[in-house]
Image 1 (cartoon, rainbow, N blue to C red):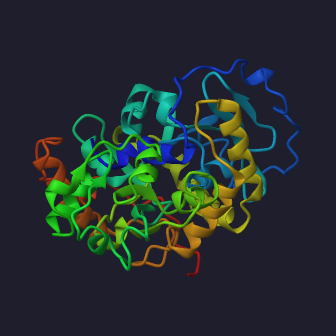
Image 2 (cartoon, one colour):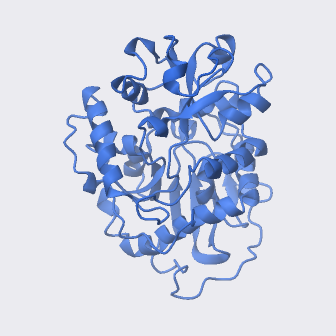
Length: 395
């Protein structure tokens, strides 16, 4: 299992309780209180860049790889105030509102994780052709290439928020993973891709890899000598502020600092659907680029929607406004979301970076037997043809 595909375990640490069995909390979209409110925005200019009515499906389906959270803010920010929530299917649908106008189509955002029995997003996209865009991290894209090939059309999170964390009291003075791991303590994870990357770099020894992480904080709390996988946009806040058994800071280093160069949760299209959706993507991809920027500038309404959806879906996952607000700040402070460093364009894929990703993670996945060969053409994994190169955060 690739590390990115095990994020359902990594993020589950935030819930502070084990995941419950997936059950419907009752009711359909039509029965949800507060759904179907009147939309109060103007229509997009006919045939303009925000008018999707004649080029996109009547409902643009977006598939995320985990439960609703602030890292997915761009997708949820497009959901209009007239939305309805389907608590059985675990989805939200409303008018697709971008930059303050109604684009003429609806958007449906679907969460991943337990809601889809933890199936990888590329597999979901091949099972359900209605999914137009899915959130697919680069190593998961490589792992799925043989059976479920997808093409990345834009980056949303520029840098992975995945990290390794440790207790500062148990690893006094440690500022890096290598320093924290120097005494040989276990690195507890749920997938072996990033641990093998650390082994290859001499940062940890293979004997330190412990793949028993179950997505809960119990092990870390009871044995603070361990190092543990986590997310810099979540656990530093939740462990210090929402976990009574801990309630103190953790130290960490981003995996991106030590070679985890993947594009996290990048927007991808089925490889065989790119051409037929080209007219839609030419308008939709720039909308997604701008949506991420706009969300970070004004996240409140979207964060409230995200928290409300988590509450309505009732899957055992919990998520607070405190975590959401912390995530937004961390995404900016840690340059998790920033312009592509190579081009200065937000959302653009860097060919050299993609080649590096293929070289690093293709080799790891091939050595692990997850793919047959690391001989992969990086150019088959992405296209920048739909990117609007005038869109930038200006950072």
